[in-house]
Structure formats: structure tokens, C-alpha cells
Length: 159
Image (cartoon, rainbow, N blue to C red; front, side):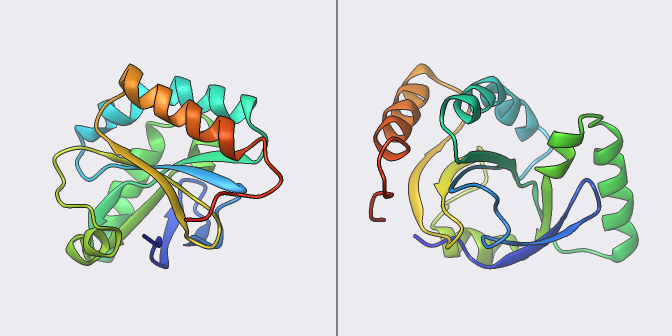
């Protein structure tokens, strides 16, 4: 799979185009679709922070993915979410995507919106890893195994 080209604002109000504006050599991307999905994202954050420290070149992102709607609605929703996130790094790395969710999910082969998706992609949009749902020990083991192989080599694995 290849991550589609999408644009959104981070919570520092900076417009970004993904995947090219991802900062990491590899990027751990959390994609929630519903408000309650934040709990699933939060269950992974401690691990994501540890992995960033452990593996240079890795950056994690949250991409709340919502249906495209009116400008005022987007503004109010973004400002409401932004107010709940005081950490500047989290604000920088949380990028709200307002788009056609069906098309976005189809481009990434994400069959539903029942849980979050966790992807690892590079700046070209190549996908190297995926899982879904809340944190699990199995998910952590798979991520650590992937990063242990990928980030210690001179080159990335082929997608």
C-alpha cells in the first residue's frame, strides 16, 4: 500500500501535505476515525515515545480523520481538540484530516472504522507495517521486531 497524498492542519495551525511532510525516516502513524478512538491511540503513546527515543529517524503522528465539512465546523472542532492538548510536540504531530473517509480508507485498504489503524510509512508514502486496535503485547512485539530490523540497517526494507 502507498499512503495517499492528503493535506491537513496540525494543532500549531500549520498546513502540511502528507506523506512528504512527515519528518521521520520512518513514521509511526495512528489513524483514528471516531472521538472514542482517542482511548485506543492513547494506549499506544507510551510505546510510541519509547520507540522514538530508541530508534533515531522515527517520528510518530496522530491523524484524526474526519469527514469533510464546513469551514466553521472545522475551525470549532480543531480549536476544541487543540485546547485539550497543551504539549507543543503533540500539537505539532497531530494533523487533522478532513476528507472523504471512504476514499481515504479505500486508498489504504482499511476495511472499516471500528478501531484505529497503526501504520509505518516513509516520506514517499511506502507502507512497511500495519496493525489495528488498542495496544496489545503482540502488537508491541511486532513493532519492536520491525523497528529492530529496519532502523539498525543502512537501508529500509522494500515495501
